[in-house]
Length: 388
Ligand SMILES: *Cc1c(COP(=O)(O)O)cnc(C)c1O
Image (cartoon, rainbow, N blue to C red; front, side, top):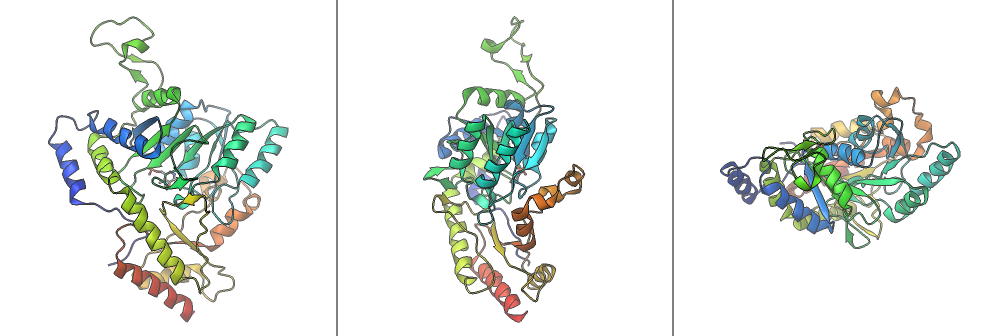
């Protein structure tokens, strides 16, 4: 048995909730999707929540709803999953990256301020910026939101890692400093619906646009019709939308999982505390959590300066695997992916992301990681580091 870096936690209640939908009249477009949306909106303190079949889909329609189109520019963090950048490309926009803070691994407000100043001079300001709440810890949204307002830029929070986390004592997703927040419910994330995502916003107009775009750009609401109502069969396609709907089967799993979110976050933080203590006297640098944040701890990322160790990172991964522990690396800087490298990015312009990529590794972290398995992770890592 190997210990993966992440996995879902499925209860009997989850299975029963899904079974109930399978026995009901609606597998999709039924009552469970709006119930899930309402539960997430209530949890995070947002007026509107719109569910979709992945965070990637919701990032795409969030960009569309904000009017991202050909010739526009979108900025995100290079230390993220590729979906944070691809959403802009789907809309025909160009992507660029803002270097990270070396302690939080989040988009650096200092780097952002400097890049905005230059961009204004060359008249190439982004339309949207997408800060990513890396590992489940909020970005410095107060600073990022302030800069965005100053330059007239829209903000999408990629909170794929971060449902259940808090910033300034408020739940991530309340969009206090942004236009839209996106969550992911992929099985490795905090709660899962198999595949799934959610957008939250306080803006009625954006919520309406995203609801339309999620389902072909179609409305059946008579009060919104542009042309005359031909009869009871009538609906209108008013925009070019997509089919990004979440099924009720998936929503039932998500809604059921949401009942346990507090215990998931508690468990993840308890494991993080154990790791911090266990690795305190080793060369592994623990993640830094800002006092303004409660991290959802999707990931626990350790860092080592492998240049001063006698072991390479490849050897570390292999030795840990030999003892049954699968490490991972989140993330390869997006600009290093061949598809993005062809756009001509220079890694030297992102020194903190480059250093992060030299030093980082993800250690198993999930709510159901048993004490025995935590012990295996800890003793294996201590063992590998002491025998090198
Ligand atoms: C997982 C993830 C996504 C994509 O989520 P899906 O639901 O799998 O589409 C986007 N951004 C980040 C930062 C992620 O970790």
